[in-house]
Image (cartoon, rainbow, N blue to C red; front, side, top):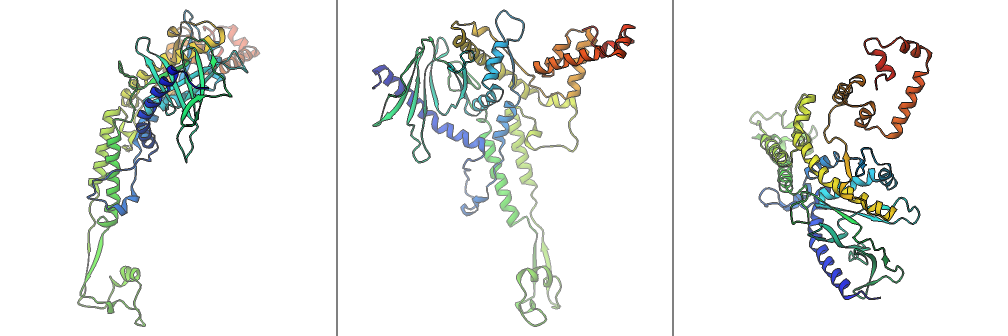
Amino acid sequence: MALSTAQATLVKSLTDKAETFSRLDDKYGKYYEGMQVLEHIGLAVPPELRRFETIINWSRVAVDSVEQRLRVKDFILPGENTVSDVLREHWDANNLDSEAGLLHKDTLIYGRGFVCVGANPDDPDHPLITVESPRELSVIVDPRTRRVSSALRLYGGTNEDPTPAFATLYEPNQTTWLVKQGGSWNVDPDNPPDIHNLGRVPIVMFLNRRRTGDWAGVSEMKDVIGLVDAAARAVTDGQLALETIAVPKRYVLGMTKGDFVDAEGKPLPVWQAYFGSLWANANKDAKVGQLDGADMKNFHETVSHYAQMVASVTGLPTRYLGQTSVNPAAEGAIRADESRLVLNAEGKAASWGDGWAWVMGIAERFRTGVWPLANQIKTEWYDAGTPTFAQKADALTKLYANGQGVIARESVQDELGWSQAKKDRDREYRTVEMQDPYLAQVASKGPVNGAVAAVTGGGA
């Protein structure tokens, strides 16, 4: 079955868009994996020695250091002050604790990421939520509503022939599966179109470093790629220097081949002569000396300079880039050192939280048939900073203030990242403690300097 004229035009436009991104996506993928081809000026390293190239993969550090700080905690529905159990079920049913990390990483690497929501025939109460590769999806965004108005997923290529053999066309009211036949796209006869009448494409796009009017996003690695290559060239040149001018050279004057023989007059092997006879010989006219090797300090300082430049454009602490001191940083210094990195992660959380809210809104639409106020769903994130456990415990203890502070006991447990199951288990433990005759007797006499209240949970 052939596509309609409008669909064929749409597929052509989205295919062209995918091809536009393809080369840049391939470049970013290689830089994240440290598999890029290093370009040389050609003055220092001969072509035959370039197999010794060494890549310092700061590109991956720039991505992973941010991604590791982006962890979704919970969702709150409009008009409610408590965590939504329903939305949490959607999250858990689709293993999004792990899948969300893939989305965030893709968005940081390629500048864009996608989540698709669909009906789940096996479990209608928990729609399917899947993270899709930005290397397979291309979309058109409505500039007024700022939503995806159409999308095309291309897949099915092989290593021998990477040309996609299958495609999925997403439109606001239907999803159509396509196959390549005779060089043209046709509707898959084995998979009739899904007329869902949702009213919008069930795909949410996430952008990194979003700008108004720009729907492509920017890779988190863009600013460091040139510096990564420069540092790699410095390290590669350093390896060549180690092999040529950095190793001390020994020399001898006034000796001939005849001086390098054993007791029987046979020539000595080169290394035996170098380490032995060169320094101990019977030739009174021989002069032996050593040429000092070149100082490698300039290579070390060059790499350190590039590391500082990477830190300046990414906000990463220089210790993340291998520039460490003898003494570890103190707790307060760690927080201050990471301030730009934390603010960067928090800024992304604010933007991507809206995306996750829309994902949950679409999932609720599939579950209930009614659109919720998805733009009012609130996404909560874990703290993007890295306070030590001692710091966190001290701060929460002061806020709790033995039940007299500004937060409740369960708020402390929430901030510590406890799951609901762990909180329920803790509540059971406390009930068992209260049933202990000794503790009950002590509690009946009243708290002594707040100690009993702290043990039994009094005042909460």
